[in-house]
Length: 114
Image (cartoon, rainbow, N blue to C red; front, side, top):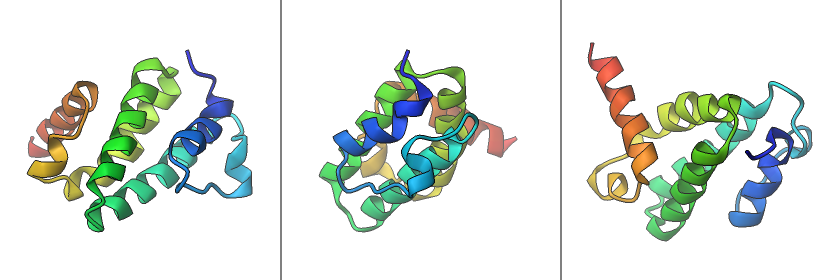
């Protein structure tokens, strides 16, 4: 399992364009959702700018974090990352999502449809 305290460093090493405020460099316990929200904001900018290669990288990193992360990290990806990005994801972006995030997105869409 990935340690929550290293998530911002891991994201930054894989996606150099993401910059985290100083307080998110080594997030305090419970602050992982702020790190994921910053990551989601960056990914959203890449979607809006049609940077599909970078969007794919972001989705891949999010999928790895989701698969290997703590329950707090998984929850942050479900609630902050996917919830924030869901309105921006269209057909071409949907195809870039790893299977685990496609499942999360589908659950999210089913929840809001009820």
